[in-house]
Length: 348
Image: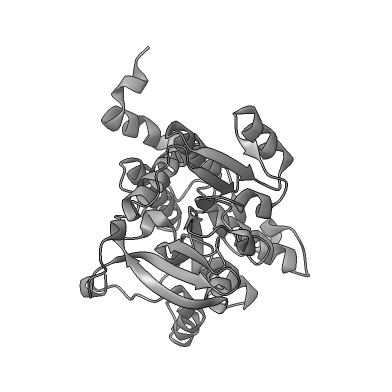
């Protein structure tokens, strides 16, 4: 992206990047539009009461994790817990949309299982004991894919409704995260937040593989593994000999203790779908990206004096949870996708 003229920074540099932009503010500053995948910028702008805030015309957030980050900032805000009052611009929520809730989970569930199998050939899913932490929309789709392979899945979630749904559909329930991971060949975190930490990691079996299905390096406490390992080494994709300069499949840790345990962290704890694979290698990924583009364009158009959409009432400050569904209705996004990729869904 840098070769194409974009400024690229890591998420760890967001604070310094914001300060640079604040220092560069000049009269006639062009408006700012934020497109997020994880809730990094919007909460930080508000938390720091950034001088950039008056210049932001809106934001688009793609992930549930990002919404949680914004809601966490709202709870921290001492003035009011009302995000509509506290936020200084509208945020169009993709995670609340019908497209994100109804279409994407099945795509991700399929890709998680495919990518795990693409990273290692040491896991034979048929008959394997698998632990699943997080039984939300993504977790349930991962469960369906695993069960279709013949795996035996034990799941854990803090929400009663999800536990009931999982049990109704034939899953084995665990009372604690430790119970879910004990004696498992493969453990997958699907919570969108920390799911495997010091409470569960000591109960892993020798030779276990760990995988994250969420959108950041949060699910698995890799730092705990680093701190408790005598030896760590990278291993090659599909267990081929690791070649210099080649992509690796993950890191193998030999944990201290008697007996010592070998734990294999796929993708080093990052989402397996983004590790050595083209993001979401499925046309459904285009659907979500299209939604984000149209949402961003809608915000920009309402700020454009030459746009015929300027006369429309602007989005209110705060999280706009219905906005993306309204845009889908206006632009027929899902219909266009179905006509192109799934015309059989339109029959009858």
